[in-house]
Image (tube, rainbow, N blue to C red; front, side, top):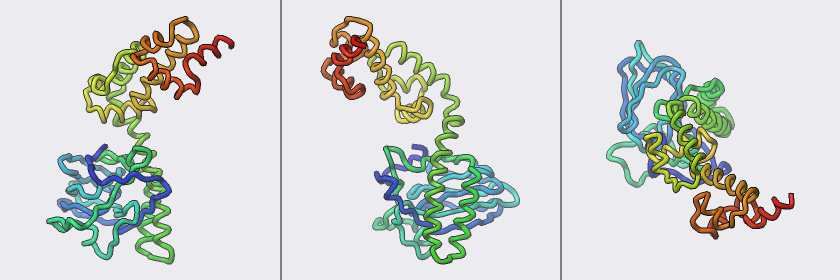
Length: 301
C-alpha cells in the first residue's frame, strides 16, 4: 500500500460508507510556510497554484499544481511551501464512517503526546483493497474532482439546510472518481517502467506453467517486494500472479484432456500438481465438471 498506513483499516462494504466533512477551505500560504503534525482524520489536498514539499513519515515528495494527494490519519506529515510568492490549496478534512466529532481544529489535529484514548479514523477496505490508495506524490486531478471540491467548500462554508448531506453525496462521488483515476494513472504511469519485466515474467510463466512458482521468485523478475509484485501484476494483467498461473494451468489441462490419452494423474503432474485429488477439486471449481466428466463431454462433442 502506497503510504505505509498500517493498523487503521476497516473491512467493510460500499453500503457502510458514511463520510463526513470536518473542514473545507481554499487557502493561500506564503513561501517558506510549513507545518508538521498528525491528524485524526483524513485530508484531501489539491494544489491549485504553486508547489509544495510533502513528507509522509520518511518519504519526501514534491507536489506541483494540478495534483491532489491524500494525507492519512495517524501518520506524521510535514508540508512546506516552496513556490514564490505563495501557493493556493483546496483542503478537505473528512472521515469515511462518521467516526469523529469535530467542534474545533483541536479535534482534528493531534496534540502531542497523543491522547491514547482518542481513536484515529480508519481507511475502508473493500474487496481486499483500500478505498483510496493514492501514491504519496498524489495523482493528476480530474476536472470533475476540482468542481466537486469547490462545491464541497461552498456547501461547508455556507451551511445551508442539508449541507452535510450534500457534502456526503459529493464525497462519495469523489471517492469513486479518485479510485478509478488512481488505478488508471497507475496502469499508464507509475508501473510503466516495469512493463518489460512483467512481459518477461508472463512469458516464462506461459512457457513453463508447471514450474512451482512462488511469489518471491516472481518478484525477483521485477526486483520488488512480493506485495508490490502482486499490485503491479494485477494492474497490468487484470488478475493477480497466482490467479494467472492457475488460469494457465487450467487452460493446458483442458487441452491435454481433450487431445491426449494421459491419465488424470498424469495431466495433473504435467501442469504442476503433485496431488491428483487437489487438481480435480481445482478443476471442478473452475469448470463445473470433474476432469473425467470434461474429457467425456469433449469426446462427444
